[in-house]
Length: 354
View (cartoon, rainbow, N blue to C red):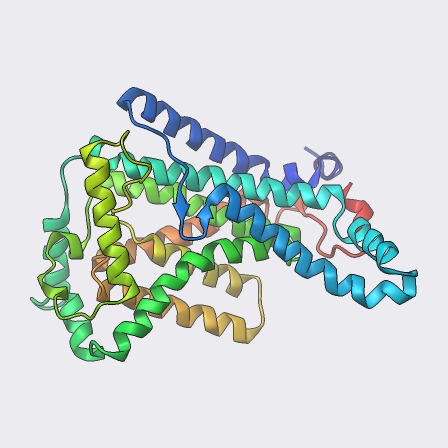
């Protein structure tokens, strides 16, 4: 294919053609598994509401945050709010650029929704658990102790528990907000697509890791090392997930909940590492990169400290994140002249999106 032929395709196809096909295939696989295993398909809901509502809403809010200041700055120059709004939307948010954002959202949603359902199917399809093996590896790595005990002794169980709980729970907001920001605020569409695709690939690869080594995690395998921890938002979430597990195992058709417990690999670690790695490789401001690397370290500590994951889960999560970033770069054509999208979405360049 020549460069000219590649650039003749719409921007959304150049950037999300391959990732979208992979997400669709993953969704088809999930639906086939659901049909064969006779299990219900659910839309994954979080405390911010259904993902098919919160993701578009966040994108719309960020588009508004992108557009409104520009409209206010240019209203006098262009003769009023209506004319300024029309000009900003036409030049900044043309149909081709909106199509890129929509394609990114669909790619992410299909991957995430399918991941949550296949994760919920896990206890019905893989009934053996590898927690004993992973716990033995933890004790060997920690010299015969539980890694969580070591961290709790070093960091304490007061302020550290509250801090790490806040860091862990931040993930629930970080993922959709960072996705929306990448699709909306990044003028380099290829970089935004790279991150959105890497997130999607994390869900897909993470699902396969769950089935490769099915496990519940330290807190659900043996709660004793965590009995001294105070009540935090994390402990409340752990209780809720266990209640959901019991409901789903009792009758998956009698509840709207999904089963959400699986340890290997740590997707909290892989997702946050993905974000930090993309931030580093795309040369975001130094302060942003430092913040992301600190976030990676604190998230990694929190996953072990609270017993969500074994140490090998964290190692696997780092590897999974790195592979997702690499595969996403290939999928969206980072470094390929044929797939380069417009790096700057300003009026004089917007026509090249068409």
